[in-house]
Amino acid sequence: MKTKVIALALVAVVVLAGGAFAYLRFMAPAEDAAIALVPKSSVIYGNLFIRPSNDQKMALDDLLQKFPGVENTDDALDKLIELIDAELGKEGLSYEEDIEPWLGDQVAGFMMPGGSSEMPNFGVLVESKDDEALRDLIERIRQQESPDAEIVEREHEGTTYEVVEDEPGAPSFAFLDGFFVAGTEEAIKATIDAQGGEALQDSERYNEATEGLRDDWLGLFYIDGGALFSLFDDEMQMTPEEKAVMDSFGLGSQSPTAGVAYVTSDTIGFEGSGGVPEEGPLAGFGSFAGSGLLPELPGESWAALGVPDVGRLGTTFFDLFAEVPGFDRAQINSQFRAETGLDLENDLLSWMGDAGLFVQGTNVQEIGGGLVVESSDPAKTAAALDTVEDLLVREGLEPRPVSQGGLDGFSIQAPGMPAPVYFLGGERLVITYGQTATDQVMSPDATLEDAATFGSGVDALGSGFDVSFYLDVDAAQAFAESLMSFNGQTDPVYEQDVRPYLEPFGYVIAGARKDGDTVVSKVVVGVP
Image (cartoon, rainbow, N blue to C red):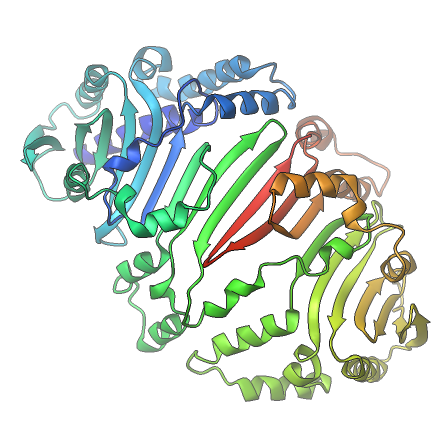
């Protein structure tokens, strides 16, 4: 119990003093020094810069000034220190006297093989600029929380480390190359070995996962999913059938993934990178990075999703699940046909190409949207719509014939529905809600490519990225507020405590690009 108290107290100091400051302290180069101490075998690694690069600091400063209640970065720091001190004070500590004197530039953590799912091998690294000050803090915590607990010195490869009480599973720590490292004893030994050339920075898998990412960031994560799955394979206590299902997805052969968080003066960005397997059940998914029909959707859309080659994507999923024990492809098609009169693969997926889904309208009266899918076989598309129409008639609805923009189909309007739903087919399948949305799909005055906010998002993503998702935050917020005030009343909590913090945001956009065998994905939140 004594060892747990000390371990928890140390972790609390790391989280409060390191993690909370990772986005707000500055004035040091953004060089990942911790990576040289992280074991090469690590399956998870994360790093937060307490003091990011000057560029990231200045960008963060610009962003903070756009939110209410923060005059500048120093003001934000002062307020954050007050919050941290309120928690540290419960332990008889303060940031200025007990943390600031030794806290360095970054905080990192890793998990490595060994241990168990209940207590894996892990390590936490905190950069220290004054080891003696930190040693003094540790001793004061020990004296306060567990005065009878003994700290024992041990040695590995000529390097001294310390264990809190000489018993199996006791927490350990060491001071290595300007870092305080705490964790399991095996993890501490591995960090010592990392100094001799067994560090994660020397791992080919790590370098391949991070190669396509930007160099200047606030935080980074790395996960070797295949190794992580294999690591806990036995711990999961799966039945042979469950294990066969997992193996059919190739989880044990997954390539590592990595990602970074960063800011610019008007965006918050998240960028991830992962390898695409050349063979195996997941090999086919690397070719589905693309925008689909998203850029061609109506320019007034405030939410849009693009999917490339829907038919092939669906067939690829079928092929993937075909390897799963108990999955009966023929039975699923048979059940779908029994319910709809359509063969899922032959009557639908076989002709479906790029697709786009959109929403527009900022109040209940104007809301609209729809789905657009390219067709490689207009005759099959028309036949599928005829089958859907017959099904709706059997359900008691009364479709009305519609022709627009060279497409034929029908519309339905169920009782209580403010506007009709249109089903049109030919060279494209178009399913829309509302006449305005239908008109704008068939003959748009402008597309998303022409929209200024969308263009800003595309620029923020960067060259080579295909947009797959877009959200205009201002328009979405206006629609949400119209719903909240539908009864003529407003929510004072929302108006005072939520809305001011939403207003600085302009858009959210996501996309991906494929570089050889690697897919780089990015999400950008605009704060214009």
